[in-house]
Length: 366
Ligand SMILES: [Fe+2]
Image 1: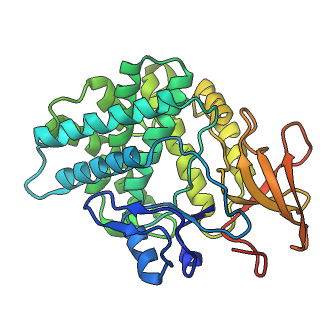
Image 2: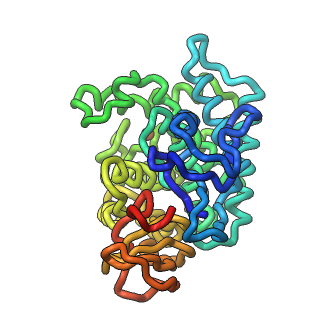
């Protein structure tokens, strides 16, 4: 099987795993079912970023995820609930149940990350859809906890960091949809409105959530602050930005850059690496960036990649500290002609991943 992002390219493929809806009991997709346009639409609506599909080239391949599917669903459901509470007209007092579900979700997420001995996080890419913010919140929380764990934070610290990261964009409920979903660049005045989400989120958490620690809610306020003082809402400099906020900022930027680069073209992970390295120590905490790039791969197991020499294959394993140099099983040459199956470990070689493709080129499999 192989991992595919949720796009129209999925139509006609066969699901290799059952996908449960974040809320509700009926599965969205049943293993063995052929995917239709309606399925793709349903997956998009629920914010599911990627799907495992049957692939004749890799019939027996299976990869492990960083956090278990049910943990991911739990976090996703909690995020949706929090956004509903925060956005409701009566607003904005979270019930004890909402708060306890949030702490259960964060606890499970931290457990999964702590238990996972895998050196490299294997995360799907997220695209910009209507409910991008939900899935983005799940990703940022996971990334932040992965980074925090490698910075040797205690479990208690990871829980507070994870809670802040899940809530980080909750203030976006106050931003009008036409700004939030605008596909083009925001005008300066629209950007000012968008920037308001940091302080609005902080207000929402303070007014509506009883049990959130200040070290979590500070992440909501500060996740757009930058070391050089160029961030918002307060333009704080490095020494006045709390460490959890710095870690969440790195997770936020990493996920946003990956999604943004994806938007119109094949994904080029080297570009993400370049942007992260450029900002390290200037805008983003250098240690957190270094750890992120060491422990979070920029490609995921199950993705189709083209290498810098044009060869085509699927990522079958990741290498710690080598975000662009995983282990790839080769499938085709630079003209998409099939080649003998061979596993190529890019670690230490001159080759790296040039781009990530959504699907095999025509005629190669699927
Ligand atoms: Fe934000």
